[in-house]
Image 1: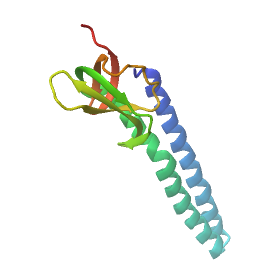
Image 2: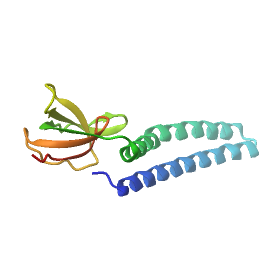
Image 3: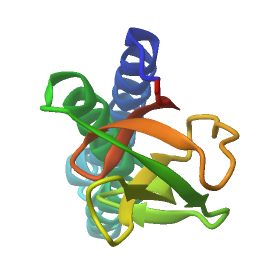
Length: 153
């Protein structure tokens, strides 16, 4: 389900956001420096406040999610995986955040357990059309689904 293309896309998005954040930082620092050179206190203060507010705001709202998603994709390739075979229960339509990644709840009833297991299906990946009760094999990293295919009998 995850390919090197996903990893490259996440890395390029992260680099693009970091460069944009760096451009904001440099532009606002230039305004502050111009205020210091011209001895205009209001311009230096404005540049400093803009530097802090815009850089922090953009980093937390735009760059941080890309960092989390890049780490998530990296972990999908490097982390330990586990296979579980069971009956598909449902995959919700609602999107929620889990560890900074937008996911759908994916329920599986394993063959050797009474209760359903909750997994997370990445919203960036197309959902497969499983019918309730269909036996599937889920390869997961933690609670995140790496791959889900029909189980061989």
